[in-house]
Picture 1: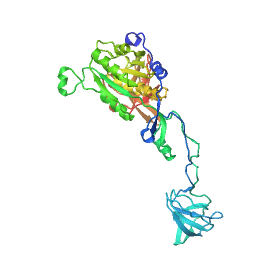
Picture 2: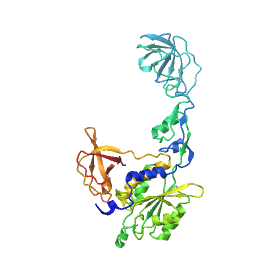
Picture 3: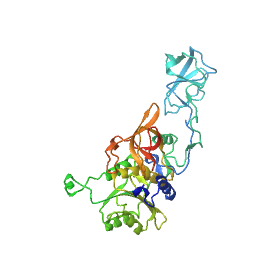
Picture 4: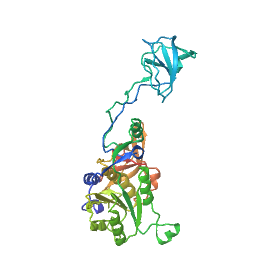
Length: 409
């Protein structure tokens, strides 16, 4: 075996991911309102300061009753009032008395059970009859039955989902401490980007990387700033130097290989960035570059340089950018690879490959199938792909072999 697969200095995918997790410093924390916190990571444990329910309340529309024992069919009660949800009442029930009550309303003092309205016959304005057997404490939501004061609601490091935000809001939590989200600058390098169809006559192409990255960040609900820079050393150096002063992460596409116009790496090193790794034994995306700069205030700027081919950018975003963003927020763990059954043979390659595949269940077994047009300059199969599958270096795989992958959106 020869060529780039045995090139000196290449590290493995797992080594690259480990270096990202080990070398990345967690950002500072900030207080946020819950409506700003979707997908953010908690910087502290969150405990309840209240009981849920706050008070004993009715679980149904019906009647609060006071009885000395279980209630038999045809038992009558005197109706003495009504309590709506959200309204307070000083009513107190005595044996044989009832109050009309609605879902969520506070149970009046003396209530022993609640009868849902479907089993109640209204005799007249002051009397009702219960038509079925009714046990004590039926359809009553007891104070604190879901959450009690001091109970742990959410743990440090937990990522807030829609459901988690709703749960915390119901418990009266309005603001929480979170790890800051990285301030991200995206730099698209190259003179070859076309702005119109007419530009094709001069050998230019449409830009896929900018829209790809912008959409990826929109998907995770985060804002970024995108910059385009010409393929000149001075232009690249000026921009990277400027961005390194105020951004937590500079994400670049193109300019990280060894061509005459690949300036990202030499410029970054000249500015003062420390190389963590350069070149990964993978396909697509071998000439990936990761470096860090420690600023005067001891904060850090990270630079993740992705190759220019759009498929390599896509793989880099799904695996490395995602891991780096999580690490900056204190989540230092490898991607969560799934296991699946391969539906066809795959030839050997000297580098580990990430193939765009289609995953589906067949009789409760997750299976994956490769798609055509896997070259690094091609993206059309992303119309069908829903996962990236790892194909180990130096191995031929057979139909039925177990492989590992990552779901994509």
